[in-house]
Image (cartoon, rainbow, N blue to C red; front, side, top):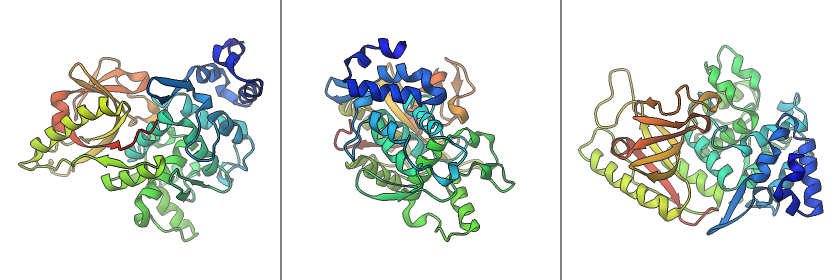
Length: 362
């Protein structure tokens, strides 16, 4: 009843309504959220919006609605033999419905590709689903927006590996679904290029690729490579703040000023990295090293930067709304959607780098 009564459903053509009802019928356990999907709008220009289901992918000329239905006809990846096509749709749709709160990196070191995943779903969910149609199929490959074909690392979808004695030991890693594993695994393989372990077709190389995806994130140059391939536009990165240097504070201040100017100028989310755990202005304690973490900056207001944090296993932090965390100092604004904020003064001490598109990626 909620679908039939939805105003956007009523504005669809007869054929589009039929497709929406087919999606509702085969969307399994996430069926109840279809009215939410109908309500979502996609930005297509300055103050111009359209129903997100009509958003067009960057390649192939298909809409989000058409691509979700394509998942119902693909030959499923051989590592997903226990899944039905309906469950495959629900797995991908789970992320599309709420990239702010459901996309996460688990306990892996994949914060940069995870934040980029959130950015892509937010800006163009149709493109995200188009990639998943390829990676989660028996072909296990997809063509990025710039035309590069990227194959899924072999074995990355074999959940049984997570429970093996030599697997990365963290229950948080279980929290990622197949769509997240596919995107983050393929993203790291592409961005790391020649540094990624070679696939020699045996079990040893499969384990090596699996472990590599779990342990690695992206450096600035790798981040730029992935962003430009996914969106088919050029990106400009800020300076990179050094550690324990006489210039650390001044460079961080310049980077922060640039970020504050970029957010309203670009009028869209910005990928930002901060130092994490160990502050960059002094030598690390014995036995520790500098860490970094990427988040998706949304807005700057009231002396604070608000951002989405993909860090948490199961997508949710352990804190409560209004609570705080440290290193860097930050506040939980909305735990359910992983919205956090950091004061300007603290950001100036912890920022690492950021990237902005040279052309709008709406």
